[in-house]
Image (cartoon, rainbow, N blue to C red; front, top):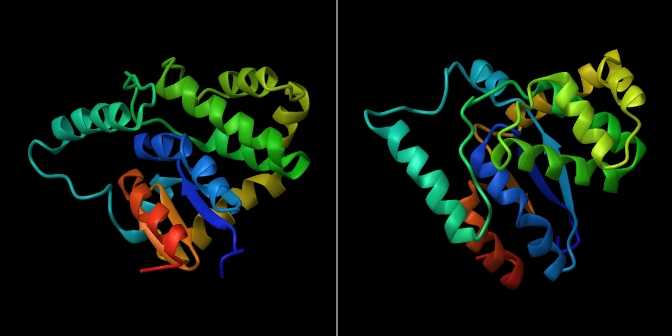
Length: 201
């Protein structure tokens, strides 16, 4: 059990996914664990579950905006709420899976660049050219990435990963699975730490 990889399901437009992405690898490394990053499409998950989004109550949008920023300060992570929010993450998710097939470490660096471009610099990661620029920034071949993003096999990979997430019970992001135990949300990182320390509780 203790050697199983940690599964990290996320959407690039999810603020809490971004916050978790800044902490999950270092946390796992402290306990000799690896993390498998798996971008999914929250919109497709909500559609499959028959929900437009997570439950929205009066005032929840305003609260959420405060909580995004407060949670980032709590975790000591840079954060600026994007003006255009949420956005489609099809392009960066496809690019990630293509890059992952070439070089896992490169794909991880790319994922960090995408998250920071959106949640710190305010760039529109739904735009393919922005995604290609970010891929080039981490040393990838932009032309090859563009071809990969349009590869039917990569399009199918993203669909399969999203469908598998739904089948596995994922209904939000980030969704982190440790030894078969699911944790939803960046605020569950302390529980994940305790789980890794103790082998479960």
